Image 1 (cartoon, rainbow, N blue to C red):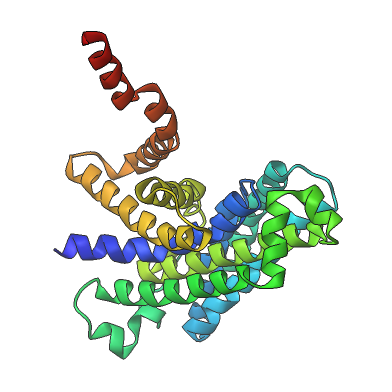
Image 2 (image 1 turned 90 degrees about the vertical axis):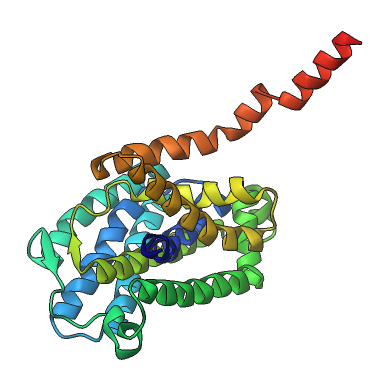
Amino acid sequence: MSLIVSAIGQGLLWAVLGVGLFLTFRILDFADMTVEGTFPLGAATAVAAISNGMNPLLATLLAFAIGAIAGLITGLLYTKGHIPILLAGILVMTACYSVNLRIMGRANVSLLGKSTLFKNHFLASLPQYFDSVFLGTLVMVIITGLVIYFLQTQLGQGFIATGDNQTMARSLGINTDNMKIMGLMVSNGMIAFGGALVAQNNGYADVNMGIGIIVIALASIIIGEVAFGDLTLNQRLVAVSLGSILYRFVLLIVLKLGFSANDLNLLSSIILALCMMLPVFKKTFNFKHILKRGLDTND
């Protein structure tokens, strides 16, 4: 039972990454590699700030702001510098590694003995692992609600239109460059925010904790979409959280089958690839069509 509760809690905390990447991957229609740098950037910022006496909540919000700045740099390189988005993201991601070392002063910083969001009196009184479930649920309800509200505003509709059809959006007077920059800032701010939460839950920050993060975030999105089928935009945002939880259960099952924890990134990539190829499998192995054709042949 404790493993199930832990998987749900971890899924909710990591779902922040899925919602953050959803803004660029699904709405703006490009994959942003910056997230592999901003996740540990958020963790490093929060841990360093908490270690120096800052309130954990303020440290987490500071992580969001620093992540948004990294997103701003990527956006400027992409829109004003005309660097392809993939390369712009890789450039900022690479720079973040050195920035993280500067912030923390070393490769790994522990929060042992420090106050975090998970160490307040109320959460400490909950049963084991329920602290991450409670805080993760609260964070995801707030974040998902804010994103849904934003997308229904005039600014949000302009943001969606930019991703759907840039030419049409520009003809309507929408500044598509500003929309892309805004999307990258909010997305990377949320990724850094998620990094701060995960670091506080784990009790440490490490400069290498961003490796494979984009795969984990994509898995939340893809698994949620595959598991729940055709959904509205708002429903898909909710499905990201559920997809993140399902992904954690898949990893739990894989570990129970005897695989090593060192294989998790490999297994995550395989799981994501299979989920993304599911429409191809359905088309290739159309069992209903094959069965019907077989019956017609028999007749």
